[in-house]
Image (cartoon, rainbow over the protein chains, first blue to last red):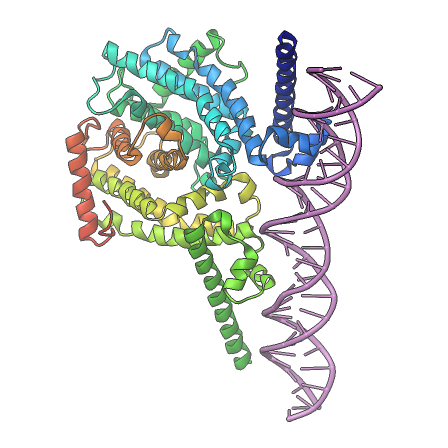
Length: 250
Length: 250
DNA sequence: ACCTAACTCGAATCGGGTTCAAAAAACGTA
DNA sequence: TACGTTTTTTGAACCCGATTCGAGTTAGGT
């Protein structure tokens, strides 16, 4: 009885290790050769397993991709955990969240492309329900961080009391702005066609406009480039001091 | 010589008609059965042509999808042409642009999904250069409308004079907000997980926050639901009067 | 040592996008 | 109108890669 349980445990552990190996290697291959080049049989061979074994872990290729995305989302989400505790004003902490996301996207260009591809109906339809949930779940800490900062801002009076808008709905604005800018920035040739460069600088400025529009104090004019840049630098420095930001980030 | 030219013309016309037929039918099938179900050989058979003939018009399946998207983008873009001439304040005209887009998305749910799928690196890579350009080109009238409204707002003093931001870069904010909200709203189960409903109502409120943050007059508090709703109704009415909006829209 | 259940293997299957050699049509010429 | 040449159309064959599944292997229990 006891032995059955422990050997059972070992097998489960081994299974998880193998799954992690598949996910890890898949991510490497995507980083190196792109989504296009990823092949199930090649990946299996790479890990020294048969194709069929790979399919014991993932119902489909899309399912595997979702697992890769979930793993990276977990890493990404971890970056946001400590932000609500930063010794910065609430509005600056909100900026910290945006900057953290921008930097993460810059350092993991394939992550956004993968996510974008995944949530496409065609692809999403082939992801198993548990993995969909895992992916959604993995992002929760981010919205929790946003929620906490918004709630504190209201408590402190930095943000007017809610009338008909919840914390999450308030966070939806910057979230959508972020996602949208990532999409536009990633669409090959799109922004070039409009002669728009450095999209993330614009993201930051529009973010400030949005916050100021909601009367989040201290208000900051998005059209004061010097002030905007100074605030960005200040918050980045705070992130760096707290060790929440790779020194590599611009 | 003359005859050669005229018969050549006829052939070109016939070719274009056939291409339009393919695009039209492909769109129908996508509407009815979804992107997933579209098959090149089935589509060709549906139009009573051989598979190979279809490939005389489109280099690949993705190329065909881009053509479908371009056609719909042309229709969509046409809706924006007359907006700068509307007898509304500049800020309300900006809202008119956003509302028009929301309504179009609501009436053409597959259009956004298709576009989202198309700009994915994996898919975009298989679209021929001319069609990519055609798709980008098709959207130009939209950015021209935005450009015109922003320029007029500055002229009239509704919007402070540009410091370091062009008209297009100003329009980038609402654009990103729109695209982002569409993405989030389309990602099956995502917003539900955060208990967020009616994403487009929030889009409108965040839009107002963004505009107010840029000091676009007359400023409007995004957290005054009554005022926001009234303004939405007013602008929708103006669109309807000008015949720029299907009466079916909410 | 043997039996059985669970797992692993990879060659075979399958589906659908894409190609291409043959057939048909269109065109120009005598 | 008949004939050679070029262009277009055709759809069965090809190819690629995701997925499956029956044979072979391993591990646990007796």
